[in-house]
Length: 389
Image (cartoon, rainbow, N blue to C red; front, side, top):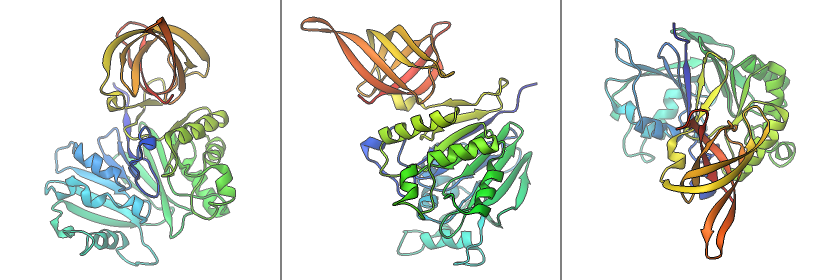
């Protein structure tokens, strides 16, 4: 018998507004959208930010004997969490069926979610209205504390501390549990307790980390967001296994997110920073969370042969130094064969020997691990690196 496997894909990880600044390329600039494929094949989508358009362009409908159904959980109605819906191409396919879930807003009343989607597609804001969408659509209102089952999976909603309201979702599958808690600010005892219930024992705890701890205490207090430090505290308190920093600020460059990630890993062992294209699998036999990055992050490489020395941190947290050959390289990064297994999103120091006018010269580069695959040689891994210096 095979182990039940769930796959969690990140299509949008940025908060507030999308960004195409080159300095945010590595983590990505699309607003929130995640996809979870449960072991029984059930497809869940978490939020409808601009990442939803990218998901739609790579759409693979759920398999099954009847018309495919997808369950979309919308945390709240701020623009960055709904602005991709109009550009989600599967909604225009008549063979698709979507079940939407969110809460009744006190500002809108009954059918809040349906009203929100209709309003953003009404004239003069969009050239076509929702009648152009041929897919079947069903809307269900939820409240904090509500739960329901889809196939073998249990979904529970909890209120989070955010202006105009926000729901966090806990999805329990046979392969493991994912807790999704975007847009929450600590400080309300009742809602903080709800967050802890959401995260309790979760295999993956995705938490808002838009601001620094210093910002949260001063200039950003009351804005409805959290920090890496608060996420680490909740993860420790609740026994969550892996923390994912999410909802990156549009003004946070890749290097700034790198810094937040380093600080978070000093407080909690298993931490990732959400990155577009990152895929996390749950349910592996060794019970380890496995994260992968897409090949496009290290694309356009060219074959090369450089002697190099690589220094970094292993998956187990130990420093290493290794002599190797760099065989693929681009202006942005390289693919390096290593015996050591570095930690995904950790920093590597790469010193390469290159021919120059005065003989062999050393190039000192710093980069971050964005991809790890099986290596071409036994006992090696192929490590994709994006250079920053």
